[in-house]
Amino acid sequence: QIWSAEPPFFLRDPRDRYGRRPTDPAFDARTLKVSEAELKGLSPGMEQFWRIKKDNMDCLCCFKVGKFYELFEDDAHTAHKELELNYMGKTRPHTGFPESALDKYAEQLVARGYRLAIVEQMETPLQLAERNRVAKVQDPKHKMIKAVHREICSMLSAGTLTSAALAGPEARWLLALAQALPEKGDPEGTVGRFGVCLVDAASSKFALCSFADGPTHTRLRTLLAEAAPAEAVLCAETLSADASLLVSIAVRARCISAMRGTDRFPDAETTARELAAGGYFGQSAACAGWPEVLANFRPDGAPPATAGEGSGGRADALALSALGGAVRYLKRLLLDRELLSLGEIELLPTPGGGCAWDGRAAAGGLGG
Image 1 (cartoon, rainbow, N blue to C red):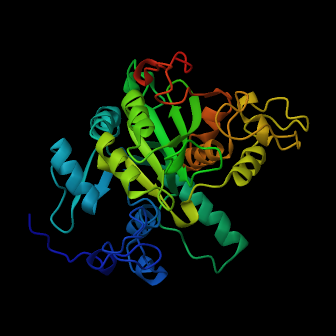
Image 2: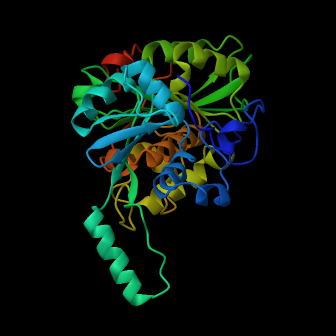
């Protein structure tokens, strides 16, 4: 297909929000640098699309236009290839499908590892006209808004499906993985410690653990084999190359998100503050709803138990950091409150520690 118009400059020389090119090891594939001047040079609809898309480059944006969901540029190429949708017009890559087909196509795309951002119209053209009229009365200099308001209303990914019909009968785990240096008391030969949070969105289950591992990463390999995660969120700034490679073998590439910079995993104290501020477990000053597994970090100042493995059935700081990374990711997907409000958080047995655990069948009970 030959397109009659050139792509916008920000696609000809793409950079992330920090100005880094794709060849930079620290490139943030989730973002695209688009200046305000470049946005203002687009049509109202395309300006609105790119304001959303530039912060969600790792998603296929299904952009609601009337009774259709439309996809543009690389997203259109993907939909054309994966769904065999015809291109619409010859100016720039553009395709779409009726709103009635969303469930069918979303299921196909998520099954192939794509992350979807569903962008809905939040008002009708008549409501927009009324909003402009009222604004004009209040301020005669008001510049008329030409595009109805749209925003992301849901995100779908392989490891965060809340619909049992889409997820299937087996647990589909989202893995959040952090790593730290060995601690005093770790077994001889330990090369690092891992903090793990597994989330099964369909059953609102969270499973935490932390463990020391040796140079062959036997425990991490066991965890990946038993859990068979559908998606992974990695603390990229602390995860070793060997550990990253093992995850890349177990999880398809487009289902792995490397978190760094402002998106990095929070430490345990920051995680505890964010959980408390979010009111996920109730606002009681006595922390009555705070899960026992997180009791070492209760915001009411309860004295902590000894950190590390075997700490009385409670998560340690590294496991809590992994939970913090998972929650930040779920917040981006608009799922944090829905899943965490149930407070279904438990400890996992240490991988390879002699307690069998079938992660794929564990939705009904995490303890194995």
